[in-house]
Image 1: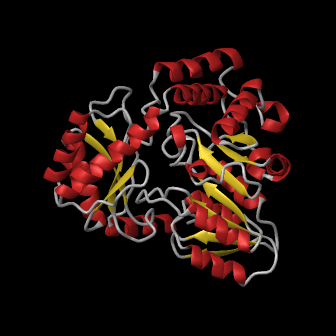
Image 2: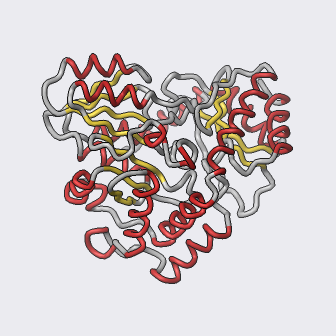
Length: 375
């Protein structure tokens, strides 16, 4: 049978405790949410939802085509200009998802004959971009500028260093300034995914590159998602104008994909403007993360010190992590559950989102539930 092999794969997943299932949530959930990526609590903010509704009423339910045909609206251009200005870059290009933005940046900036130096902890979208690129990929040790320097030193020709700014599993930050310095010694560009940094790191949430003093540099390209701190959907690439023009002409996930829906663009634009007015939200997300870490470790749990808004708590096994997350849910708390193959180190854990809109009472409730349900 053509797909008979699927059942054996499913059986292996069941034996390993790695079965994944969809769990549709209702519009109004009774659970305290520490599982989503809504870092600033903007996904349901009235200004953001009205921005989405207004854009849909004005531009329609969909973009109607690829960006190069009918899918680019004045709203997309407005969002790109404000994103670039907010983060300190010359230009920006909006995509239908952060995943598509990462595929575009890596594949279009790593042609045949080039070297991609990729961090071992990178997100799946960066890894897939490396796999699809025509350049050669060398994976190096996590957050190790010396390993990057060594890889670049053995190569002659174009090269690019690729890394998350904040790694999604443990929430640790990449040493961006050191990575840029290593790249510059060998004439390599730097492409970083700031999905978990935008809205959380940098002055007023302007991102990790801005915090590291790299925003706007001619050899630095940043990708972001609109689906985390901005509470919407979609992604973008930020960088020098010639790089953005290159992506318009050569990035396949831009050329052949339908443009971002106007409602998502309108929501992201409204969230960005709200963040400009209320920059304190970024600092609050970091404070919540630090408080969660302090309280969880005081309870004797193995929590990784967060550099942004992700707090990771180690579990003894995949099965224990699944049971722990289920017990938290039964007690009214939604938490993320990361297991192999989603975690590069093979260690299962709960993944908590430190949202800026969480109250002290909610944080104490979360700590109490996680501690009482530990395996």
